Image (cartoon, rainbow, N blue to C red):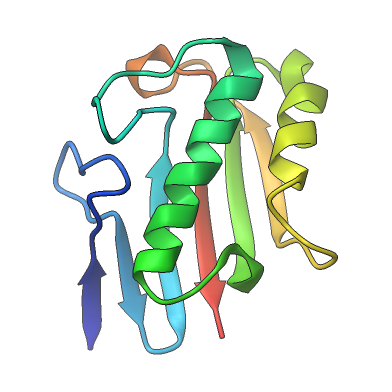
Length: 125
């Protein structure tokens, strides 16, 4: 049976989706963008600041499910500009230990609220 996961420590879902869904030992975390959950405002400061907020939002949702980022199996990363890949990667990589998740990173034409980055996760134990 699937279970909805929600936390006030990450941005509220702005549409018909859950922050995450747990099914058995798997956790499917919706894509997060650089919204500060306390203010509801978009974080400025470029790709590094946005990536940091995205990762903190993901971490909050994963922890609300009783897991950690070390449990991440798969990440899907969307960048508005692949020219910023190195800057994104430098921040992103700091959130995972010696065994980062599998992932793909793709450049897209546009993301919600015109952010620079969005990341979703699949976690499991």
